[in-house]
Each structure stands twice: as structure tokens, then as C-alpha cells.
Length: 209
Image (cartoon, rainbow, N blue to C red; front, side):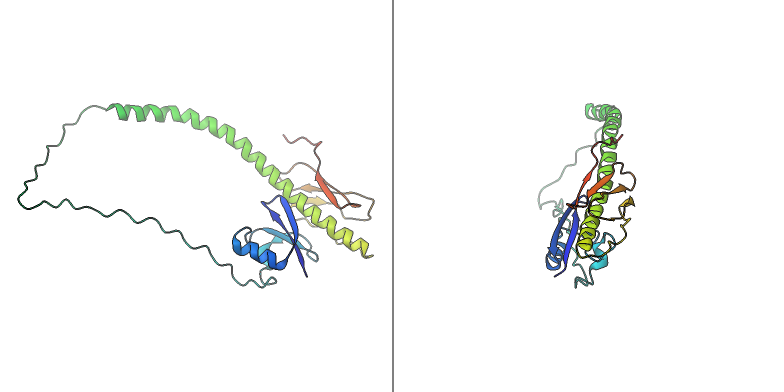
């Protein structure tokens, strides 16, 4: 039975899971065709879309479209027999009302508030992008370390390291020598894997500006 790994949320490696479970997660919407997956035999992590035929999935059923709510029925202003409808005269134009003045003042005050919110949100977004890049490289190095340890335990030479989410990655040579990987931009921190235990971690001693 083929066992698969997938990257949940782009950072957390989950697995191993059987192929049937991977298909169930796809049909339930828990993962998507863009989710990164890996199994023994693959050189690197790749989108699930490339393995649909191997998993026996020929088409992913689309989610049913959400219909907009029906508009309320229009009520026609139909005059009743014997009733005379008198239309009030149009009001004379006046100066700006209190509500209009309040709207203008609120709009003027909103401009600096938007600038403040943008100054707060932009660094948070950049930090999220850095963590996502480092998490993807961590998952890729973990999968490679697992496959390399399995190959060496069977007396085989490990395959070359992948370069999907990592811009640089060491090739495994033996069980005593750790390997490292460098995430693609905007990731900063180095990934280190101990081959004896096939455990990988992000170097916490490196500071991210």
C-alpha cells in the first residue's frame, strides 16, 4: 500500500496516510489539487493535481454554486377605487444636513486610520510569507530525510535532494552527517535535519528582520 504525506496549511507535514484517505480528504475539501504531496519514489513535493490519475481520480467534483437570495417582491402603488391619492409637493432644496456633514467628517478621519491599519497589516503579512516559505522547505527536507534514511537502511544510495521549496539542500551521505536546506525567498532561516533520527527543525538562532 502506498503511503502519502501532504502539507497541511502549506507548513505542517501530515502523514503517512493511505491513498484512499488522500482521496477522501480531496473530495471533502480538506485539501485541494494545489496541496503539496509526496510519497516514496518522488524526487520532490508536487501539487496533488499531478497525481490525480495515479490515485484514480479523474475529476474533482466542483462545489455547488451559491445562489444569491431572491429579491423581495415589489409592491405596486396601485390606487384603490374611490380613494384619491394626494402627492405631497417636492421639498425645497436646503443646505447640507447634519447627516451629510457627519459622513464627510467620518470620511476625512478615515484616511489616516486606513494608513495606520496598513502600516500594521503589511509587516504581519510579510512575516506570514516568511513563515510559509520556511515551513514549505522544512516539509521538503523532512520528506527527503525520511526517504534517504529508508534508502540507506536498505543499503542503497539516497537520491539527490529536491529543490522545490528549498533553494539549496545538502545531499545525504551517511547517518552521522546532518543535512541542511535553505528556503526560497522570502524565507530566511536554515533547516537542519539529523539523519540518525530523521528529525528536522528551523534554526531558531537566526534572526529574521
